[in-house]
Length: 162
Length: 410
Image (cartoon, rainbow over all chains, first blue to last red; front, side, top):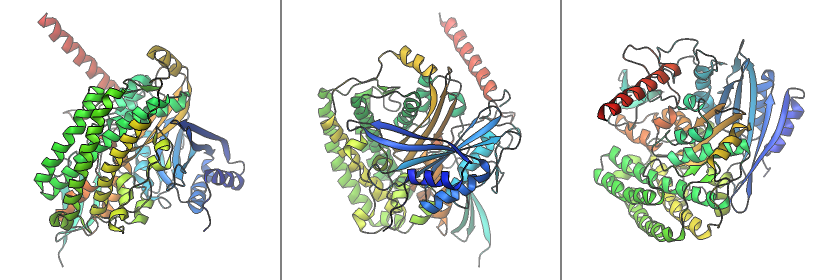
């Protein structure tokens, strides 16, 4: 049986395939307990033009578990962080891939990945409502905020009126 | 052929423990399609967290959920520790693990009682409540509190579990091993429970994978996935945990309500074992990396970085992302609870179910809407949405009011 590529291998393939569109790759390790067993996660920033292709590449190599999408307002941009995990099912074998993508506030658009990972839907809709990101290809109906909440007001934005 | 009609459930309904809205399309008694809308229990916790320092947010995180309060505190504190590069003493890792497993014990027993309640088997609900009291008492004995324990601090734990307290924990373990046998007998051998759970609310392994299901919901569908097994945190890497699957009991996986029940029952026994091993193997040493809270706070204010942490909470994986940016308050905080993932699986489980099975299926994912609805806007009587400044103003007015009452008493 062929072994599925681990996080290190996946990150390498992403950086080879999307040369110049992947940056700030770093390894993140934390040890716990008496035996100091360590976790391993990678952080990398993808250009938004290849973001969906990168997710498709990960899905093709080793179908990941998407835990959640985090997001923040950096001032001029919105950063989304897709927290993927691969290789679960063995003792301490799971590894993380945190895929970051920056979207300009003037055009905060990103395609949906629900055709690849249907479970991403709720997380994508939350980012639409809380950060005002336009995830293309999913419903714009509100799932979290009350219907009477003012249009264009996004609670996680750092602007004064948020 | 009957015509399809709509049926609404919630946001407040006796069959739901917490507010959430379901919109079903029904033909006859059969569910054809399900839509759901959370957002009715929003409290604005993440937005509040981004206005406070990490030590204050730790106690706020503990209040996301009344059942898995320690799981949120555990995940948030480890995310902060990862962002700030703070190491936790080994003994604290073991004490933290004991609290997480005690929480799983009372959560799973509460859930078993609630499932029995949804089925209409109230003697089992009452038995569950009675059995759960022992672990609640134990938590109070160890921490001083029954719900929000306040045991976690950034960099360690507030309270030790000294040797003289071990005996009471061992008694509880014995008690829960006996309770496990009784629960197992009731849930696996009672004809009514089997009829109401077997083949009901099926979620296939592939659907669980694609919908990013977590915890007993994922394991009940055969996904060999448990953060305690897969990811090193607290003392779990030392102890060694194996994901519990229903096939261990039945030899097969159906992905139904019964399988999700079996997983939780097996985890009651597993939690008792983990607690016992933690007591046996607990290392000596300090409880905190830095005893002075002011020193930790100063370090956090000057820290810059981002951290993630994960916990296998009773309902599944918790995930917190924290970013510190050399300032007084937490720059970014994203808390994800297991219901966030598992809710996506409910419409699939509901397909072709009978109306009478709806509460049982919803209960089978052990939903926690308080965990799911963290960020919120509260509507006043006028229907106007309230933002963080409105809430702050209300808070000040309330404090002023209490001040006047107090002065009036003097």
